[in-house]
Image (cartoon, rainbow, N blue to C red; front, side, top):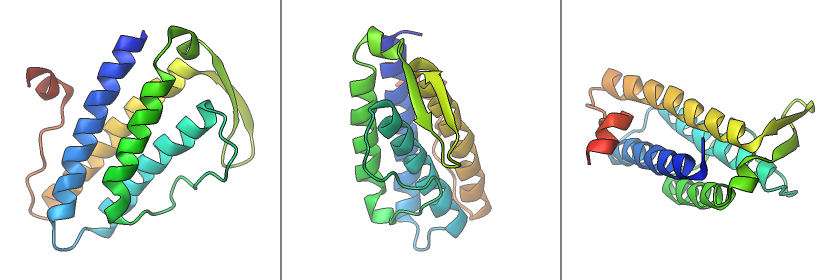
Length: 150
């Protein structure tokens, strides 16, 4: 996994998340569970990028809810941070020391953390698609292959 892989993968990840967020934002009443999952996806990206970039300010909790009005701006901010992280091969090969939300300390390679974020996003996009269907909506196609075809 090289920097080009991550740049391309996170561009896709961002567009897929954005498509779902935009559809949710058009609904008259966003389902509470969908709002919670969307906030969680964004907060998780923020938490991990803060860890990788060694930011010391207070980190949000992984389930802290965001206002739906802030979703798109936070998604853009997260993508900018991820692009900064992936701009060099050397950073991807670095290990990041961090403390999780339970106070436990760990060390992982940056490339593994980024891969985790991609898988985490795919998992929660599946949940959001199901919630949209349960609310009578037709979710956007967010599969990677559809992104590649565009």
